[in-house]
Amino acid sequence: MDPFLPLIVTSPSGAGKTTLVRRLLAAQPGLVVSVSYTTRGPRDGERDGRDYHFVTEAVFSDMLARGLFAEHATVHGSRYGTSLARVEEARRTHRGMVFVIDYQGAAQVKARIPGALGVFVLPPSLAELEARLRRRGTEREEAVARRLANAREELLHAARFDYLVVNDALDDASAALQAVCEVAFAARGGPPAGALAARLAGACAVARTAALPARLLAGESVRGVPAVVP
Ligand code: ADP
Ligand code: 5GP
Image (cartoon, rainbow, N blue to C red; front, side, top):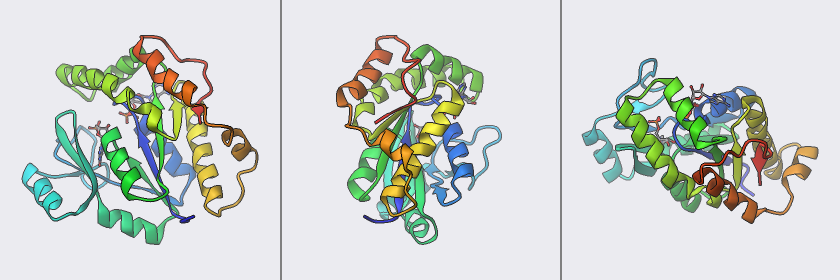
């Protein structure tokens, strides 16, 4: 197996993927994050080149026409894309790359980059998702509403991912994402992840996996399920 780990982390806006990925990167220096290109404007505190490359529609379209994106999608009315060159560079310099992208981009990465592993982060409930988006305070009211409406559509795609991570207690979800990563490194020739591998290598519980997003969409809470569902 290719030793390089392309690790996709997807979730509805506000479920906590940025927070979880920040912790993962701090714990795994062999990983690098793909800084995406976007036509969305920067939020307070976001820095060009660190959080995103903020570009105009014209620049984005030009990059797309020149085939410079490994994947791209329109999400919540803005365009986002991952630079192919950055993936190739990461392959030379790191053990893996984290793609913090939406489900459309995730499908493209899966199809295009062999060995890519997909993790979908679920909120414990839609009510908590809304509370987190509002607490973050980065979006105007109409953007919050749009993100919440889109969350329902996004959850319909969750069951296609390799792992679901329920982000209820942050420490548990963070440990779960790190376990997924360590097991994936072990499978690619790193040191064996031992007990972690045994915990995650169980038969893929597809029915259970599919049931979680459906329960969220029905307005239920999925608090109390194990933080990671293979
Ligand atoms: P995303 O990147 O998926 O849009 P963020 O990482 O920005 O989500 O998280 C959304 C908000 O929720 C942030 O204010 C973050 O601090 C908070 N948050 C993340 N994880 C948790 C958690 N497990 N419990 C409570 N709040 C959380
Ligand atoms: P935000 O505007 O909140 O930073 O991100 C909005 C959505 O765009 C999130 O679902 C995020 O994962 C997605 N996104 C960010 N960068 C990319 C990218 O490069 N490609 C794709 N397909 N989606 C992205």
